[in-house]
Image 1 (cartoon, helix red, strand yellow):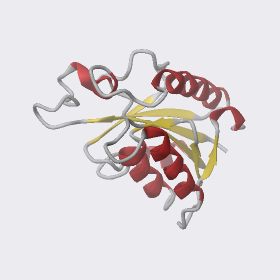
Image 2 (cartoon, helix red, strand yellow):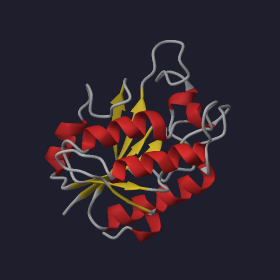
Image 3 (tube, rainbow, N blue to C red):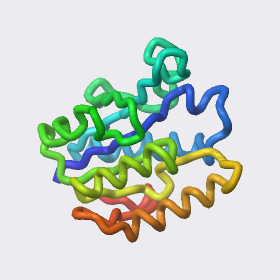
Length: 177
């Protein structure tokens, strides 16, 4: 059963000169280990990059569009570019996953409460989906701390009613391939 690890928006504009992300350094290490496990098991790692409009720090012509330097990116990994929170909307992600023969998605990255959440919900309409409970992050918001946002979304995804849901929500270290 080939897995695809989706790593969303782990771009410099979100991590350098930006509000701190919950456990960003730990997250990058866990994502690198998870990517290695998926590759070893014959799966595919797909990095999703947000293309912001002109003047936006995520615009493809600006340094902030680049992926975070500490991520272990390999030549066999794939890149999908998006312009909305949903990694499926207006992208080639769905056709790429079908071409790869993907049976299960692992959805990770930044931001828990925006692009990760929207992509998880969209994925659950299409594929059995795993969300590593410690495989995504966000910043503190004015109304809620990042750790609580993460906890809340993990609980929602684990109980989400969808054609291929709910998501399996487990820590990175307990995932098996």
